[in-house]
Image 1 (cartoon, one colour):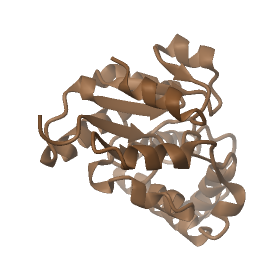
Image 2 (cartoon, helix red, strand yellow):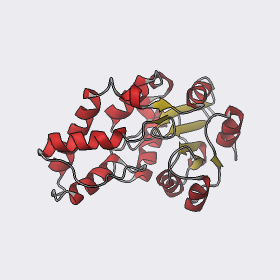
Image 3 (cartoon, rainbow, N blue to C red):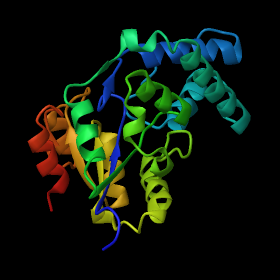
Image 4 (cartoon, rainbow, N blue to C red):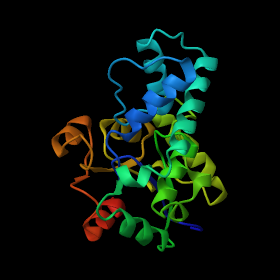
Length: 231
């Protein structure tokens, strides 16, 4: 075998970093910029891809879901985050153990790691850069929420992008995330999963969604490492 043995793909929100409420505020600012009126009602982010969320927001707000409208809101969302990038670290924090975990796997030659996130690429980069984490993952083997509505398809994108390293079989890919959407993506794509109960979903929620391995958080590096390498 040549190259790393595992491709590890990290979710971002509520797996590595938490900033509860900030994303919803960015949606409100983005919708106002894009369509000139206030966004009404609740915005459910919850691990869904940005394209999926945008489609629902447009429907809820009575805006025809066209490619043009979707791109308009996506661009406004990226603009909102970048306009408030200095505020993001004030509202957000790195979750316990996340830095140590990223550093550990970045230094393990058997592992190659990227991100698989619901975020727009530019927003995901902004979030990790805000806490000095961006250099620890390979952005060229990562996949983002503005690339496909279905999160499971993002796993395929990441695997395809990693082919310059080698061809990773499904059981050589490990997705780490905190929501039933992560669980569904891993099960649908046929890859392995380590679920972490650091978001709104409890251990029981994640098990019910189909996760076999669930840990409380990333603070126990030995437990995380065993889970990532579990056969």
